[in-house]
Length: 152
Image (tube, rainbow, N blue to C red; front, top):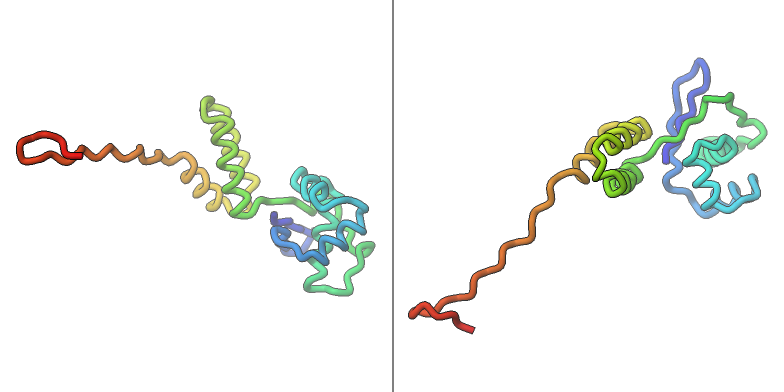
């Protein structure tokens, strides 16, 4: 996941939370008194406490002395976006769930495009999952002998 931090009057920062070190996860878990899986799920749902603590942990990579209490974004300054790998996984799930209902599928794919950090990643993932699949290869005919009978 990519957390976009857009402080007022400053350039947005893109914080890659897709790959966290074990030590960072431990700090995050202690800070919010929760388990990483639950924190990741809450972050995916846009829960502010999860977004804040993970964004803070990622920012500490470049600012090691940054204290949690000193990282206090305003409401609306943090937004989670899906990275390329996550977009691909979601595209496949969406296609399987809505393939029989084109209207719902189109709406779900639009939401995926809006949730992706890079819209091009979403377009590629959607194209990949909706591309016609090659049918199974035709069976090879049995070889024939000179007299026209099948050989075994």
